[in-house]
Length: 225
Ligand code: AP5
Ligand code: MG
Image (cartoon, rainbow, N blue to C red):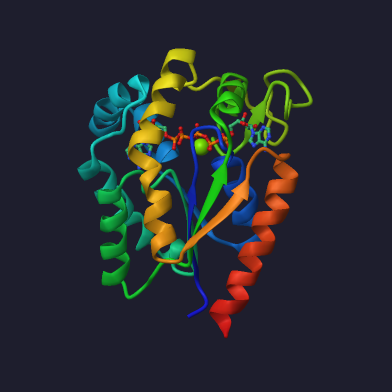
């Protein structure tokens, strides 16, 4: 088996989306972001999106049953057959258990959980200054750390850049609390089963990318042996 089935773990603003976009290109993996999937549902005005929005705007987790169903279907789709990069899922132990079961049912397993570590004080600044492309949410900028060439315009497709609704200071604080209480236990969870790899997310996005890419390349070689 040589597929790479990866999880990106880390607090809000750690750079999961930023790194996922690069790793997706490096390794030809499907990038599966539950946050982006939910925001697309909100945009479409679907019933699921309507329900999810109130949780997202409050910085709370959307209920597991909605998310788990969505992911179970998504990892079984053909573009994820050679491997995937999960961004924003799992976010608590019950989601992690559900993922393990779903993969087991497909006779697949996780390759690694990649943890990007950044202290809270840096995260608030990253999130408050983030801008995302209205057309493609994988195009991510920062007003100070990664500004677009022209203010509020995406370098890649010329679309408008916007702020996410949950990037308001009080929502950011709540998202961080929720991360520490509900998602952080997954670090020990994946460490226990030998899948955890840690990365220092305080470095520049390019440096973090170089480290993760080197680790993932090694994992792929090991998978092929
Ligand atoms: P989600 O969309 O997953 O948001 P999140 O986990 O809060 O993470 P972010 O997307 O905010 O941060 P990121 O790590 O991707 O950072 P980014 O690369 O953008 O979830 C949103 C909501 O949806 C949740 O609150 C919840 O309600 C719901 N939800 C989603 N999944 C769920 C689930 N599984 N269960 C239940 N509910 C769920 O980078 C941030 C900024 O920093 C950018 O401006 C970027 O340019 C900059 N940056 C990146 N790297 C660096 C660097 N190295 N140095 C300096 N700046 C950097
Ligand atoms: Mg993200």
